[in-house]
Image (cartoon, rainbow, N blue to C red):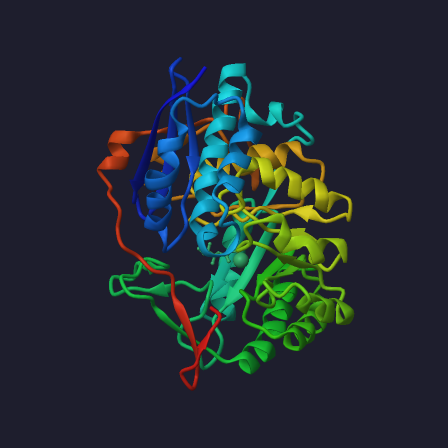
Length: 407
Ligand code: EZ4
Ligand code: CO
């Protein structure tokens, strides 16, 4: 079998998604997600200009070899080109796994070692501009069946904060769809004072048993993160995510010395090297990389096996900007590895679910990959074409004096 055709499909059924579709000379197709939120066209160019011309004629069964060929062959690894390249390589990798599993007539998880559990526990997002609105949102997630909930609120005195939906003129939710970056504002001290009160209110309302998560989105210094971790301890958070900008891995040594609050990080990482210190020194409890942004199933499986030696678990990034193709790959991988931790899951809007029909199912707050061969996703190319690319930016964040800050 040979790869006969490679096509890059860009569609925006509510937000942009980039999908690679490979077709073999035997008519077997494979899909891979290459969506890099806010920088989508960089990956499209990387794929169409530099990767697609290499793919035709390759043996689709040689997944490891093709991954190494694209990663090592590019020479310029990690930094400058990686942001685009890793998503491009991920798309090829997942499309090849999809083809291999379809050729075998098996769902992908079977090729990864088979099921290690019956279903995947997920967490959903609850948010509110203030605590009462947050409590309503938590109640909604629990009613939907989510076994765990991430809690994010607005902060008194601040206009717009990560994770809290701002409301548009028609009352519609405006998230990341911006033609210029939305400017959010930030005051670390106000945040550090407010967040323990948020956890206290949620625990008072819903009790001690529900796993609660929180994302600090890279905005703290190590000593501030240590303070927050300590202050949250009485409320036993499931984790504190991305407390510092963790491209400085050593920062978490200081945080770790001060708190037993579990730590999660890695959604912006691209390679296992980004995790070396974090894993070998056991500075984190969960690795957060997405299939799409870590180069595919092949390297993410290796990361999970490495992490398992240190009792660190998986927590694959699953925001709306991971397409159903990327989510399907995550669900198959999580189903198969022993050290599955939790899966972030927000679902997608109805139109996206039509563009990408998928076999994985979300029931009672849990995901199951389904039994369709491959990753189990079908792309409706006509519907995708009817919803073309829309320019969009992620927000930026400024301190109250105007200084740019992590958002
Ligand atoms: O901000 O995926 O844990 N989830 C997150 C996400 C990221 C977006 C960026 O594209 O932090 O909401
Ligand atoms: Co996050």
